[in-house]
Image (cartoon, rainbow, N blue to C red; front, side, top):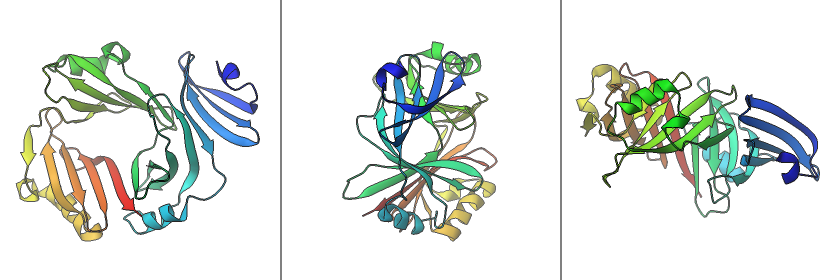
Length: 264
C-alpha cells in the first residue's frame, strides 16, 4: 500500500506501531521529509515536516498566554487525514511534564490555536467490537445504542479512547474518554450535577481553580460533576482570549487539559 501510494519515496523507515494492525513511516519525496501513520489499507494521517520555526504570529500568541516561554518543536503541515476535510498545522511542546500537540488552521484571519494531549495519529471506532473488553463492559452498563469516535496513539504507542455515544432517541449523547489502561477518565453523558459556580465545589477542588485564577486569570464559566467517576469537567476563560477545559478526578488531580488561544 505504501509503495503504491509513494513510488518516489526515498530514505524510508517503516516501524510497527501495533503488530499486524498499524505502522508509521518516515520518508522523503523530492527532498522533503514526511511522516505517515497507516493501517494496511490506507493512510490515516500524513504530515510534511517543516524545517523552519513556527510563524511569528503563533510564537507571539503562545508567549502572550499561560504557555509563555515553552519550547515549540516538530513543526508540521498535515497534508492528509482520513477524516479531516481541512489541513492543520501542528507543533509540539512540553508543559508540566506532559506532552501536548499544538494545532491551528493556516490562512485564517484569526487563528484558533488549540492544544491537546499529544498523539501521532488516530483511527476510527466503528462499533463496540473495536474496543477492549474492559471498556465494552463499561459501555454495556450504559443506555447506549450507537458508538463511534477515535482512538489516539501517542509517542509510546499507548492509546487514548474517545467515544461518541448516543441512545438513538434523537437527543444529544455524550463523550466517554478512557486512558491506555482502559480506565474511564471522563464522561459527559448525563452529568451527575451541573455547576453554576465555584462556591458549589468541595474546598480542595475550589482551591485548585482559585490557583489557576490567581496565576493566569482564569475564571469559572461552566462545569459539571460526572457520573461513574465523580470527577469534574470545567470550562475556564480569561481576559487574554484564552480558554481552558479541565478534567479533574474527585481528588482534584488534573487528568487532562485542552488549551485554546485566539490570535490575529
